[in-house]
Amino acid sequence: MIGKPIIDADSLRSLIRDNSVRVIDVRRKEDYKKDHIPKSVNLPLADLLSDDSPERILKMAQSLGIDDQTPVVTYDDTFGALASRVAWTLQYLGHGDVSLLEMTYGQWKSLGLETDANEPIVGAKMHSMTLKPEIMATADYLERAKENKNVIVLDNRERLNYLEQHIPGAINIPYRTLASEDKILRPKDELKRLLQNRGISDDAEVITYCGSVGTLSGLAYYALKSVDHPNVKLYVRSFKEWKNLNKPIVKQENADYWDLSAE
Image (cartoon, rainbow, N blue to C red):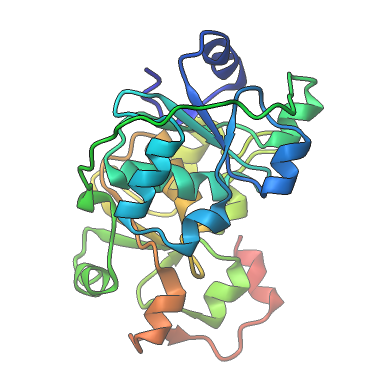
């Protein structure tokens, strides 16, 4: 069992040696085939997003040899955002033990850690489905909840995207501010300080969103979970759906690069 939102490289290497983890590489298939973390299986994010209904995700998880007890670790080479979306999806499905690798695959390789080009043969397993609606926000839920004083809506897009238009009442923490130089997320104490500075109290309900498919906001979801924030939801369809539904938006007509000094 891992049981933590984030796992370090040494711990993962130990689990791989013990054959006690399913590692999921969410990069494109052609990148995975060149080389990958040993014994990892491939689940490109695009495959998952083509139909992310719980029924299909369940079949995918089972075909990757994941049962209810299998510890799972996801990684990508895109600052953790793609891996976080896959990890969150498994968590929503009801999988209790899923973590993000603390670094990208590029960082893994730059440290000289083991890589492999072999594709493991994996037998299918049975997995139950116990959806976790408490970690997902729909547009209707968000529209109601954002009027509550104890709910914080968190926009994780670039600063200028946020300034141009955003969900009313949302605050902005661009995804890049969550990372450190060599890790997909800052150390726990730094993240806590960042969140506190932005007025996110420990007892607030936080709803994260980004541009369209919940990747950048998925990373923010895991950032909050890494500091043990108890009540976080991902608005998985994000701003694209919000606009398509003609929900209210705030526009800043004169948004320009001077506003970036706010970060």
